[in-house]
Image (cartoon, rainbow, N blue to C red; front, side):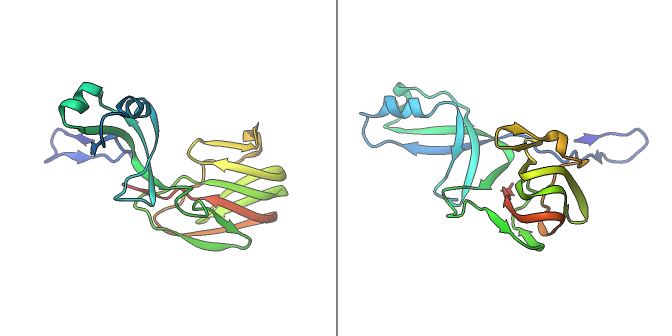
Length: 202
């Protein structure tokens, strides 16, 4: 955002640390016209989008423009699709990376965020009792853990299976991985930690 302040030259730039949605245009074509109804039925709503230009990434997108069979036929089976996405707009996707991009830690370590913006991971801690996860010097305490507990930083929820565990989480914020190196350690009875890092790119 840009703010004009009386008596000050130029404008003040205010970075809120958030990103505006965007529209991604993709030119598409069909082979023949016999499956146009099925294609239109599939191009509905929102989901995960994988582009051949970036096959290692998954975009979370929704259909933005309206398309009709007559448009496809008139355009000789070539048409423009517009997807609306929320930035940061791509994550390393399960089914693309054989491990689903999952990291398994059994000892404190340093991991690297090779994306271009901080990520909001899913972290599952396996252990029991009171446990404190430390990421880049910041503590994320969990109390009375029984077998495992999962922190979803994007959803801002803590759970075990389908059971809410928010009451066992004592962090002021939720964990995130900054661009570059991230140091991870912990205290307490922990056997392993599973991380879906959700690397993101702008």
